[in-house]
Length: 488
Image 1 (cartoon, rainbow, N blue to C red):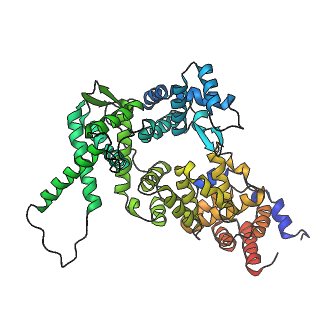
Image 2: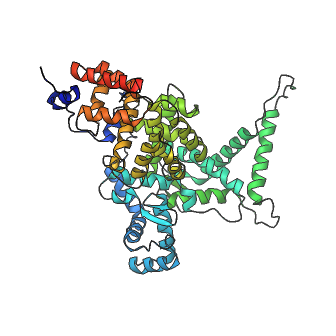
């Protein structure tokens, strides 16, 4: 017989000590078992990622130089790259002020620098620039997506006409990608006009009630011709509110688009006669098409679903395809509505969806910062918010958990365990036990009991049922009973 208390016996039993804790990043990955999909191969002839990254580094060379200069020389008390800073950068880097401004804008768009209020900080891609080819390619794709900001549209063109052309450009890029060679500008111009007309038709569609008169034969072609005439008038007359505006032919907007895409290294122009995608541009268009295909092939039709259904559809994908699904879903919505919808799901009762919602918010990045930061006062979201902010500000995901207090880390452990218990296998719950920050089971149980997580009882019951060690299972069941009855 022994006089030791059960908890003391439990603590002294080496079999019941936790193994060295894994990081919380590893714990997050243990929430569910994800089935892999075959990785699609890029078109034949596409250079290797290392070569594509070399080309992307060349396109962004000035932006990287300016970002690195700003990381060392910037004055944190001034607005990012104010006039005097531009002059200093131009002198130090032997560039003109105009080149400095252009490089700074590219650095921001590519994620090499990040703005936090009135302060500019080095982006995580800048730190990874020399060693991570995929970080370089992602940065270049961000610049590619922002081509219309890199090369501003002519001032005397109606904003609505510019917006229509920007929306129609993916069709032009698809033709260039399928052609796998030079395409004459007149061919691209014809396609651009047709695509804008189609976009206008889609916006002007009116549902006809059951009493509507049948449309006469030829009405569709007449309507299309009218739209084409309207398009030509709108594009050739500039802003409608200014009768003295200089006429703007459709070809000018095509030239602007091609020059903008050329400026980011996506295509080359042969004296204005033809356009050809660069290897980088060809690869980027292929990536975009693959993302669309992934979303279209999703069993749940994720791109058209509300956030909750989209996240459930992504739950068993590996991280790469899941991020592609998130990007496709986000692209179909405004940033503000998408972020609000994801945070709304995160506030729900399903811990799995809470974790996935923040994974999707990681894809959103900077535009989500203000809304995510505002959620830090909500106890159920605070650990996720702190991890998101730490990773957003450049912390390694494996080290981000250091920003959490012991209580916050324990709360997150219970929340993740609840997700595993609801959606995973018992073996995953046992593996999740190893990720606790406490060194022993009694210490873990003490802090879990004090944490106040609403799912504590269910998590402890599931853990007791799954664990093969009778002594540990008994102690966990006792802790679950104490929480349930309000005991200590």
